[in-house]
Image 1: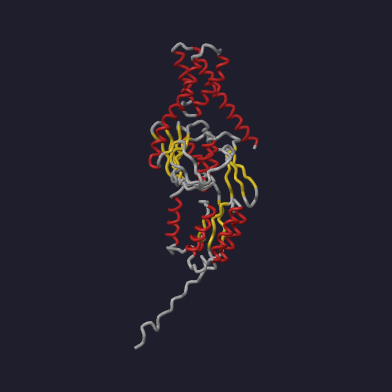
Image 2: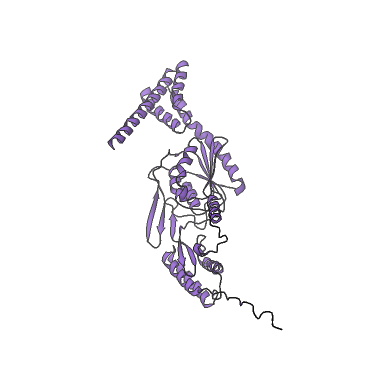
Length: 395
């Protein structure tokens, strides 16, 4: 009788990965690109010891080798941005249906980015951003147009793990022209890049109370947005200490179908003279993730009330002033009325209505100040319109 395994197909032996080649390339990449050269040199010594101990020599799975290399490198770097991964083109495909693969990828993509926007009680605007993606930069202007009537704004970054491009542009809505927001040092280029306020297409919100929600998941670009606006005294942070990743990255290839996420730049804030690497962004109001929105909303309603009333209080004081003549008061009244219109606290037709009401009450001085402010606004609009037409015709 023949043995049952005589005609069995022999199992193919899994191919061992050339880990020495991978380690050599990883060391070279870090020595060239990692933000701190001395740390990269320490990694080289540590990995070479592991090669001598044959730690990686029998590995046949790319994911296993990537995980092991990450672990050993992180014992030196302790940099949350660093990771060895299986490159995208070498990852096994779970589904060969091209349409389903596309839909799965689209679903994963939609989980990030701009998620929710609404008005909360007390005329507080709320927006939830789960990722700063370049593809959604064009949405910032629409977002800020919606929020321009809000008397306080809450930006929820509790589920935001980072990203990039829209950060500087969104920050520019809350900071004056010419402000240096931050700088980035690029190791391999040995150069600095300055990040300043960009020209925006909407209305600035330089004084509206701004609150940002963070959690321990908030990371990277989301931390940059929070940290830099906090340093400028422009935002109040509510929630948990964030993740602590201040080193922007590049994806670079390695042999054997692997790749490495290399932190190759270092963030720098001109006010704090440092960044949030390893420490995270420290909230102004420390609370757990679940209670952060309620706490911020409570604070925002108080701030919104003050923001809403402060210009009206100034205007009321000027209109009732007996100490200064009209020609001295008029520019001040004009400036406050312009600000109230900008904040959308009043509409232009209301200014004339207020003037008529003061006239009926016998306060001719207040009526005249408001009518002059109304006429000045109309004249400015007319001049701006004429200037725009002149520009178009000259083109």
